[in-house]
Length: 101
Image (cartoon, rainbow, N blue to C red; front, top):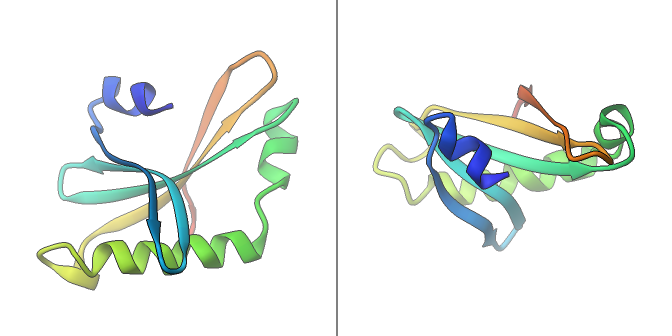
């Protein structure tokens, strides 16, 4: 998954980044924007998407806040949350801006 983002011009700066609140699968940069990526894998893209819970989104948002605290602009840093869906055949679907903090 990291290669997918890197090849599309969004270099990955962290894998399995862990803060007190939890782990973020991937963190990438798209210009000045920090992209937090949750990777979900299942038989189909739909079932992978359904496996993302509100609780997980909250955990990811809290961890992202910790990550942003270390950025030069802090919480004012532009960011978004993507969900990368991987189906049983390895096909990837990216849901950009999948949820808000």
